[in-house]
Length: 123
Image (cartoon, rainbow, N blue to C red):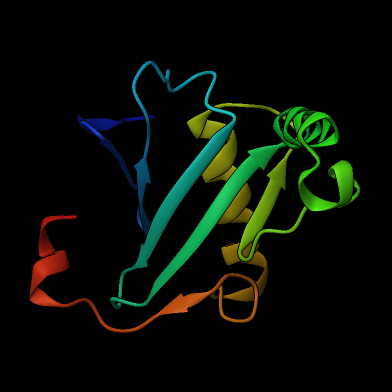
């Protein structure tokens, strides 16, 4: 998989979709377990997602149990969340592509964003 890196953005271009991940320092493509991603279709439609592994969610909920957040870690909620079993950019891209292939778009699956502004052209 070709990955364009322009920190803090990682971009993967596929025939139907382009994925732009926003990542923090020290992240590695093969072990990414929590990624915010902008997904753009060929026709310009845009969606956003937070893609996380089961393990990352468990670690967050365990931390919240200690800190008292979210009823002591009793629940976890994120709009536009997609959970993957395996970490890594490739795992995350494959999951979104599978949803896209199954439904023809991502409407109703992930939050849809409005048209790109000129400011967004750099993403």
